[in-house]
Length: 198
Image (tube, rainbow, N blue to C red; front, side):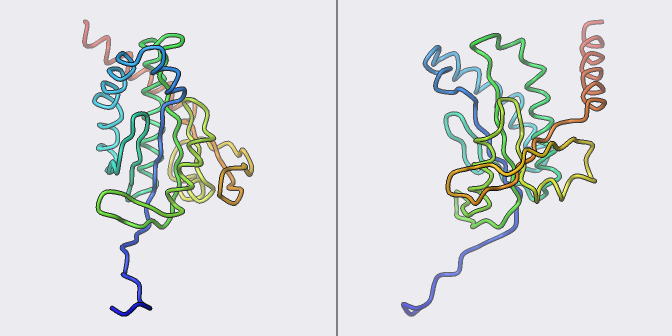
C-alpha cells in the first residue's frame, strides 16, 4: 500500500445507546462498596438481560456507564424505555441519597468498527444526548424519533436544539412510555407478585 492510500475501515449503520449513572461520584463518595454492589446487581438483574432481550451488543462498560450497539433503532428505544420503567419501579430499593438512576441517550448513525470499540459522530452524538438527559430519562436525536414514532407506543417531547460540546446544536427529544402502557406494565407486575405469593 503506498503512502497516499488509507487502510479501509469497517463501517456500518447502527443505533447507539449511551447510558450512565446520574450523580455517580456523589454515590461513590457516600458509599463506595455499597454503590458498586448495587450497580453490579442492577446490571445482572436489569440492564444486561434487557439489552440481550432486544438484541443489543454491549461494546464497553465503565464504572458508571454503558455503550451499546443495536442493529435496530426500534429495539434500542424499546430497550431503553423498558429499562427506565423497570428502574422506576425499583426506586423504593434505593431511597433518598442512595437512589440510582440512569441517564440514556440514543442516536442512529454511521459508526467505525474496531475490534473492541466503536467510534464516529454517531457515537459522539449518543454520548452528548445522554449528558443532557434527566436522571431516569431518555434523550433521542431527531432521526431516532422520525424512525420510531409510528412504530412504538411512546411519547416524544421536543426539547428543541441543545447546546452540547463539539456537536452542531442537535434537536433533542425526550422519549417515554405512554401513560396507558405504563399503567398496564405496573398492573402486570402487581399481578405477577400476587401470583408468586398466593
